[in-house]
Image 1: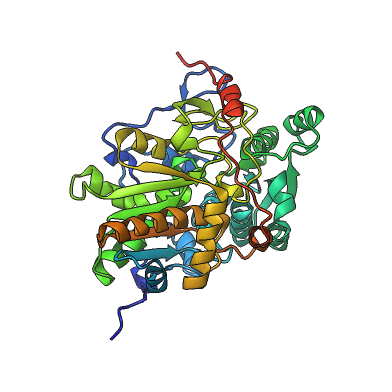
Image 2: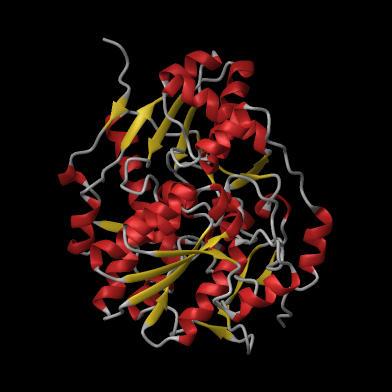
Length: 454
């Protein structure tokens, strides 16, 4: 019998609690700082409901129970499937074993509903009627639209303008689920109007869109804000994927990864996969496990950005966070991986990088699309441009195994499909895409505006 290709959990074996890494960290995370006073603070109460704030700062409970109302929605697409990439291995002529966990089967087509559903539930439970958020490529905006639809909450999405124009079907999907999606920077906020006054052609950035969404949430008592990456509670909710994967790898595939690769913009996808595994590095049971965070060379937050204090948004309204950053004023080039165009990184990932538990690799746009095409022609899945960064690094590691003869086990976090990114693939296949190099001058200028923390 041929070696098995797919590994699937039964619904009854779904994890019933999220894994919280904070109690297991050898050093605690530095606390957030208030954007005005610079003093240590929790998340601003006007932005988040109490339960989400409690999860964000929970350093005692290793496991957070998943509410049954959230589990009921999770079961509509979870658990997702772990695949062995036999055809890709053959194409690469590598002795490596390549696995990928495919999150593209959610209704929104990515991993993002893992936290969107949870956040919509907690806001509904707290009596909130309306949410605001930002979105880059549109994956988060569509996922939160889905979650708000399930729990009957009004949603306004500020979508980074370059992605709003590049990916019209994502905003149509949001509208179909009942959300209002507008391009950012917009005329709806003081922040947006000021930026458009200075630069009418501004392509937007996640930092700008976050600022606009926060401004609206602060200004309306009936509104709260929701973030799809970076923050601790977001990474927490996504660990359901890593917990499923760990069970499938060890109990069904009889394997344990030597290398885990995930793409990072803010960090939710990669961390959701690797946090249950990094626990084994922290406790010393798997010291040789390598965890690689893949990012664009045009927005190399982990590979080029210093670990320091910075705002989470352009306007300086969000809490000041200790993270790897390119500067909150930095506007990345308009690469098609819109979900990876964020100036900062999740504090948990930045912390783990500092402690040596994870590493990072930056890859250029053309090489990522090349990897995406290779994957599509072997495994049959057209991947999101964000995901192709992880595929590129995973393929590179498999090719190294071909040179060394090592049969390493490589696990790729496949964050979602690219069905709404066909125009980007068309541009690549028509030789109309370019690489964007590290904009050192613009980053240096942005880093000159970091907040001063004593």
